[in-house]
Length: 423
Image 1 (spheres, one colour):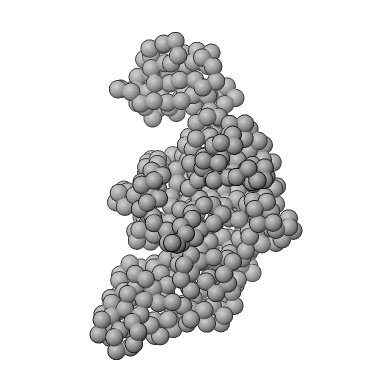
Image 2 (image 1 turned 120 degrees about the vertical axis):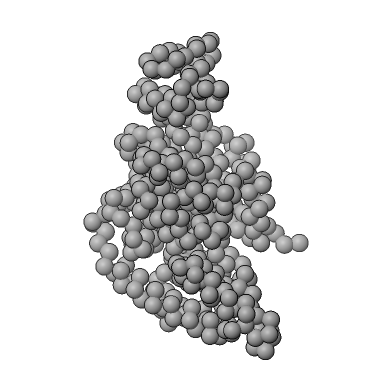
């Protein structure tokens, strides 16, 4: 029986995205596509298949209110096209108006993968240059976990809200799991929550674009966002019920609110627009020294299939194309890629190819073809047997070759000192 494992550190077997959605309460992105202004190709094509509370981000975009996008990369291997997908998502969200935060998870790579601190920095800088070369704007914060004292301080505070039983339930940790690996989960939560600190403008919606394997971090972080904040909210008819997690004395501070209220022993019912009520209560909390975190939103993209089949993985060099790859080497990998072609050319002309199981067509869909009409034409040529796999691979290989040549030239031109980078 094939193993099916999906954790932040290991993915094996065929990933059942519907099961992940059903089991963990991830919502289908398809329901929101028509509400998103100028959705990118990953959203339009269902590659970003799920979300949590992405409605908050849509509302912030439309209302031009402050929000942020945050995600990160563990520098355990060279950045490849699988990482490019997350980078593209960060950049698109930034262009839609979000403050961009990019974390390099060097602490995690050091603890989980055993890489030296020097190697983590060396590889981490390649990720930094890659996302800049792809178009990240200068109004961003890029940082290494080990160098960001704010993130580490917040992680320590968050750790007081977590126990081993919870981490065991979420991550499957065992008694022999190192304390460092367990603490890294709090660093990840801190990465996600720190854009809401007062230094960065205070509480705001934050979206975290990730692969489906990273959802355990989001589930833990959403719980921690609630636990560490003073006030909790419950929607009631015509208003919001506000409770205090840190002692009922904090409820007295709500007397400053300019809303109709009913005060009870353990909670206060506040009547009016729930969005404005929550905003004002969060402001009171921040002024009182609290965090007032909003649960982070998240989007989930499918894994890009490795060129040899299965998940694209840094530990399997033939399965991926690194963004540092020599263009001629990348070309050869594409020409050896697994496709959805038939056993013979004659069968393919008669029955057509199967782009839905073709790694080359995935490259077109995920990375190489922005225009939906152009992609539909490629798919039609394949399904109708008008093009054979050899010709299709050559076309794909040429596009990849040209992309890498241009991309690597841009990387060489990156001036890191022009960006806000904490190393």
